Length: 198
Image (tube, rainbow, N blue to C red):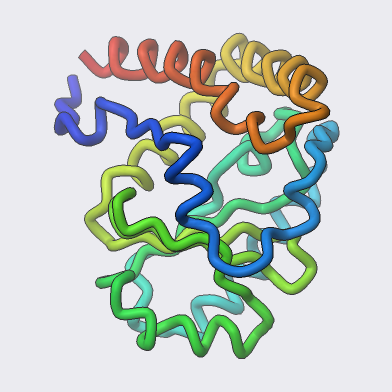
């Protein structure tokens, strides 16, 4: 039995107003449409290449680099964008990491101090979402739990895939609503994850 703290067990739901407030600069064009593709084994290689570059660039400032999101789950349909959780000591000190990341083509698009200090950058091609978190933030723990559960529970993986396809169709005229529309199915799956943990 695993006992997770309350801030891991209870998922943070951002509001549409917070999502807008956190945007820095011009949103990526990829945010204007949701495209769900069949799983591509090459996504793991894309993560490995990006992670290696990040580790070499930031060195001992890095606490962890994790492949998260749907592209990290074999067999799961996904947007073809690699999500990476980069854990650092302090995300508020942007001078310690932002210039280096910008130097290799990343661009800051979200600054969300109310969400455990989250920052998000996109690669120059906008095919990597780099989520920067403080090393003790609960959200990356949740990301790993969700990823690992879907890797080992094909019924929930398929349920999630079907929901994503349906919601991509349902929000085709409102792509900004897609992420929040997934909350119900994500919360159902987290309910099973934490129930199984005891």
